[in-house]
Length: 103
Image 1 (cartoon, rainbow, N blue to C red):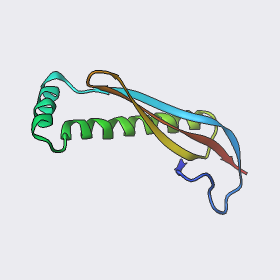
Image 2 (tube, one colour):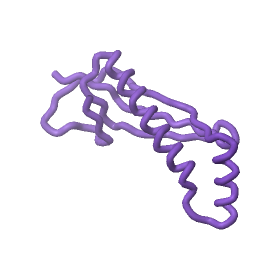
Image 3 (cartoon, rainbow, N blue to C red):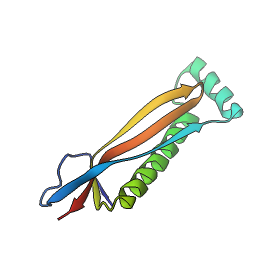
């Protein structure tokens, strides 16, 4: 599956199939959350949350690609991520883009 954040793929003709999307909601366990709270007091990168968000993006991307494959797509163009906090210490990550089929 070819993914791109651009709206076109140079040299390729394709038809739009629809919107492909995938999402996940991730949370860290209490021990990591306490450590992150302490990091907030002194400043610096909160590595537990960086890891959590990287994992969430990977899961959302894989789910989006599965959704596009189910539609018969060859690629996803104009791919984007969206995030939102759904509760304390939990975030939703959504990956979405336009599923296309090469002509």
